[in-house]
Image (cartoon, rainbow, N blue to C red; front, side, top):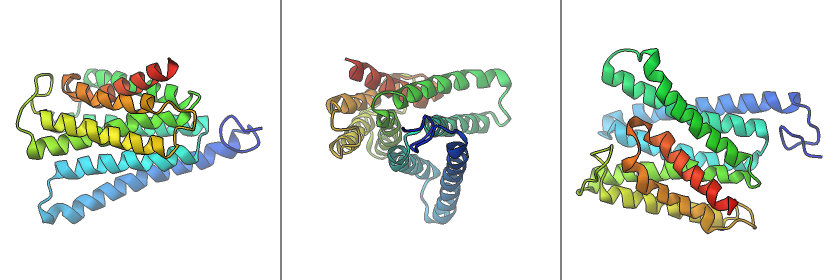
Length: 238
């Protein structure tokens, strides 16, 4: 019988806890080292840090695909989803601290933590659903859709959109939605959501990128994950 905490033949937690924990730490460190190394290598080439950060976010989202598919254990799901959300929390705190020029006071940490906690619960709900690989839907929508929207909008965007983010453009929004949809189509066609998956139900959440200009301030990333993940849960429950 498949174990509760992994894919082995015994439910013994000890057999899965330590390998999962080590893999999680190694994955986090590998991503962080790769990002720092890429920034150092490209610093002299005139590539903006903003571009590097968005490319890194996209690559990280795509790297989650094999991780999710190779291991389906509950503990691994908790760790992977918490890792994805935790990276966003650190990014928000770091940017806000840079804006203020000082460490964030505790009251200012409550709002981002609550938003990211809600996003993590949505990811966990998808992981615990009958098709656990659907957790990739909000991860790819955020990683690919948001990064593409930002890069295209900054380079070619002309017409601005109303909302919480005055810098968002029509070109970026459409490019991000298209990129997210294409990646989800490829993942669906590859059978990563199972043969019984609805197909369009996993692709439609790409439309959540259209909502990004109207999502609240620096909480747009967790809000986008909640929107895409919530739409996926709603559609697959129908």
